[in-house]
Each structure stands twice: as C-alpha cells, then as structure tokens.
Length: 167
Image: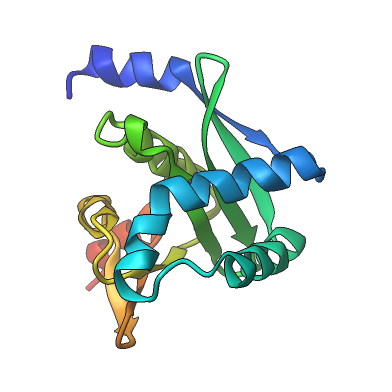
C-alpha cells in the first residue's frame, strides 16, 4: 500500500466506544454472525442460544468499539487493558469490507497505542481463521495452542527494540 492509501484509510476509519444498549448489543452480535459465523459453522454449527449467551457474557465484561467507515458501522472490536498487557477480542468486520485494509488499519492503531504504553497485545483465534495471516504479518506470534485455537502475542515495539539493542 502506498502512503496516500494508508493516509486515506486513517481518515476514513474510526473506532467509537459502543453504548451499552440493546441496539449496540444486537449490532455486535449481527456482525459476529455474518463475519465469523461461517468459521464457527465449519466446525460446530451455529447454535443461536449458545452464541447469544456467550456474546452476552463477553459484552458484560469487555469494552466494545464500533468500527465506522464514512459514518457507516462496519464492524466491532473489544479491547481489554490489563496492567501488563492488552487483549484484543471480538474483532469482526462485515465480510463485504474484508481485504480492504480495514483490519490492518484498526490493528495498527491499537498497536501504536499499546507500543506507546510499552504493552504487549494478546489475542485468541481459530486456527482456520484467515485473519491468522494478518496477525502474523503485524508481528503476532503463536505462544500456545489448543486443538482449535491459537493464542498469539505481539510484544510492544519498545520491548522489541530494548531486547534487540542490548548484549
């Protein structure tokens, strides 16, 4: 991507804290179902009751952000900041907006903020999720895995620089 394209994406994409209301809850669940549902269905099928319950638990415990492009809501991401790391979760973008640099832009913004704080970023993803390629491209490495998931982490740029510059 050229610098002009990256600048244009930076101007067009916003991450807005989601209001804690029914409309926001339903929007986040709808994005998950449309964007991520096929990956879940591939292995387990879609159990609406289970997915709603799981979503409600995560909704209650995490901070969700609406991903907005040109005033259109196109996705969601949750960000949970602990004292020694940040967890990115529930990162869903409607499939019609995939492969347009939006996921890269959202994660790059998060990584810039966490780098400034010296915090690593962790995430968990299905092994067969195509986004694994994006995560690896942005510096995430697999730290552990289960039968179905990778746990990935990207150390803060400050940590990377400090480690590589010392004897």
